[in-house]
Length: 320
Image 1: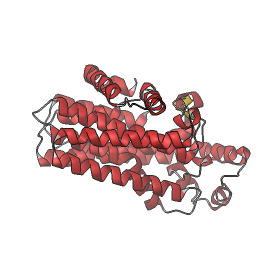
Image 2: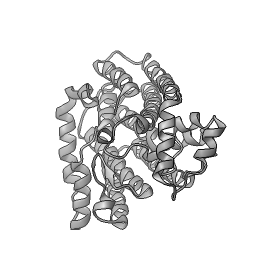
Image 3: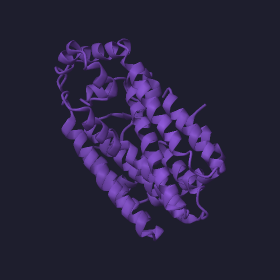
């Protein structure tokens, strides 16, 4: 079963958000317009809009503001992907050429900035100071996370706390915000908003850790990019932290830099696949998933609560 099938009962709402996004990414500049549409047409799981809609089920209101909040979060996500690809000099995303590869680095950066700008415009139309504040903080922390990722490249001695802080800002925060914003706009109580926010954080951490795991276990055609890309680009992820506890592995890992040969990184990838750290990484993911599900226990038993639990369970076990 795919992730999108778990919220297929919202297909109409997700399709509506996609159509809405199509109208909002349009610009008068033909290059930025084409680049933005390339990102939108690439598809994706739309998990952030799904979390907005599912969290809104704990409130009483359901109107166009939910569509605008969901669309703004997807725009922020799309913008951060474009910027990520520039940082990593990535040529493929979901099996297709990145915006940077199709155009150039400058076009990619300004396309991302344009999407950020449209996200801000959308949030301003929601007319909620609380949501505006939440989104402003989210965008600021995402940018800090991106800068930290740049600074951490090829720093193989970085601490586990640095890694956790980075993925919290890079991935978990946007899912956390999706859950909180959906609940706020729907009029859910502060207690419900708090629990959904905590749920979003935990499941967002599990989501990124699973991505880190898949970089070593999935096939290239599943990832839409080569296997071992994180290692190649100098990103120390969870399996590498566990592997680096072995001094001999750490010594070889510390030799990896931007000029390393594919043979060195390929050998390290094979070792990670065989040294038991992938299973240990899965156990860490499972702990985050269990805690996320526990966050939902005090919440009312609305129908979409079960969907949130099923998505959490899927995220911890997904194969790609």
